[in-house]
Length: 423
Image 1: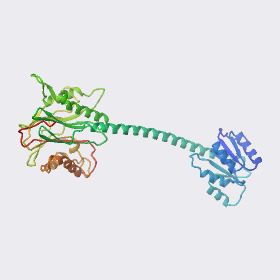
Image 2 (image 1 turned 30 degrees about the horizontal axis):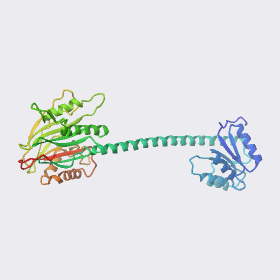
Image 3 (image 1 turned 90 degrees about the vertical axis):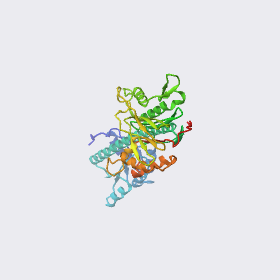
Image 4 (image 1 turned 90 degrees about the horizontal axis):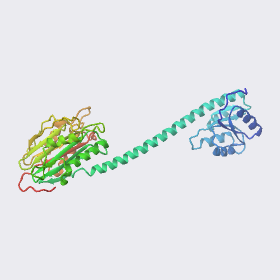
């Protein structure tokens, strides 16, 4: 029996008030390959465990100061995650002994004097359990470290997104403005921290306004950065660097044709090996004197005009592709007529594609959007978009938008005389 399987160097604590019994058991355990520590009672055992953690304790039942069951209870009250397997040695024969030991927290029992073969088998079983516990503890440690790394990464991403959102907010135009006597309302709402939608407006000379609605594919930081960049390309009219203007033959600046503006955007932002983000756009130049709106739509939702009688008419869908997909794409300009008091509406497909039913795929659509616009004809411009967004949310049963949502509305003045640049 002396050739039992070695203990593979595992540390075991032998607790017995009998020095002779400790020596006999410790000697056998060392021959089996265990690293053995000794204690004369439970109090001394706890002191040793505090200094030299162990996974296996073989303890006598009856001892002064602290007996075996009391030692078990003390070990089970410890808060660290190291499980200590306890084998109690006892000469008690009554049936309640096992119950008392289990209630105290013991894992196994051996009768004194212990049989060598039985002791070896019990220790092998203990070793299997302790090994499993160690593996679980290591997996827990690895999982915990991985969680902390992921959490730290998430926190950094969250901080970056909040910073990006703050930056993007600076480029969202005022919700209500007057440009060359034309009242304009604008709104952008993102599905996440940042988004790929952008709308804007600017004066063209003293009697026209430029309006754009852009929807960049995707919802992440890359989309939002491109949206910011595109807004900048239109907004630099004060420096003469806006993409919407060109040098006139007689000198000075003049508005570029909408199809030329979109073609230039396509040339600058073609998808390549470095980026794969495209976008749709509706860009209109509205002449406030005669009401002509020269409109170029590239893959974008068709513009709408709200009549003074509440009727809604949409522009043609158009055949121009989204911007950035084709190097030989051709873009066309459509001419709409906007009468005094009528409103020109540019918007992203996040509105018309908002889900309105319990069934997947049930969307607001152009008809539902037109129904909402018809009900808003009497709503003054300052309250128009809050009312519009409220109606859309009502149609979607309050569900959050799954896509970015943006809209811009320009109302042609009833009287076009004396137009002034408000800027």
